Image (tube, rainbow, N blue to C red; front, side):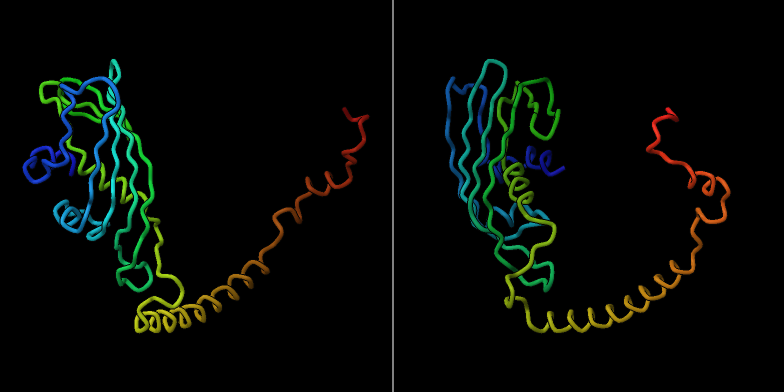
Length: 203
């Protein structure tokens, strides 16, 4: 969705346009500094602030363009536990293959087709996605750095929840202990108990 929006809003992200149509053979290098303005402009859900250095190399082959991205820096994301901002290290390498075609399409996560008549690609949203993918599902402050007020409320909530879960666990154990063995009372199991499976004469 955002990739298509960025293609239309080229003026705002023109810095991240890479012209491929007239790119000579060999490897070409581009360097970008992504700061708070970048993250605010791109308006993504995961990251709003940060400072990340990106090195992009583009290699032209006979049929495509191979992009390799090296991203290093720090972004601020809300702590999963207390919701205060915390630093999340970004250290990632990503790859993208770009090919010419009639219209814009994505053949896979790593292969993109762009209109040959346009001859350029805007990589702003790709950069944001690569950074967002480095953020783990659960990201929390180091021990002792969470918001104290929120942490205290969370501990109190967990204490209540643990008591309630303990009662449920005891009830569940009692329920399981009351269940009958599904094998008991079945005459077929009684017959199998008398068989010696190590006796090869049965084979």
